[in-house]
Length: 125
Image 1: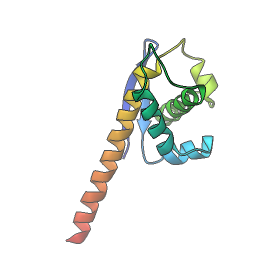
Image 2: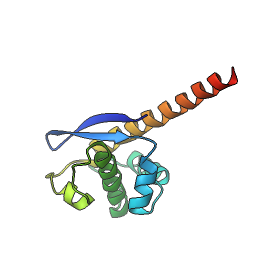
Image 3: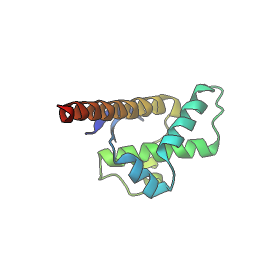
């Protein structure tokens, strides 16, 4: 099961999708663990504001990569690289988009946990 949500970026609605495939797709494309990266971004985001950002360039790149993977998962017709995809926008704020992506990811994980619990209950009968 997957979760899909549109997030406004640069004045247009962009679809993002979270599913169990995302960690694998992210790992294959970027050779990184999305769980660790999201946790690090959450911490960095909590420590800063849009006016006084404490995000470094590496954190910004992680955000762009996560956003790209979730957008590509929702719409396979988008370009095949994060750079080409990002080039479609003027600018957008990590502080507006990242919390929505984290929320979408959290809803997806919560749904998977609920499904496993229900599956275990059915098989226990």
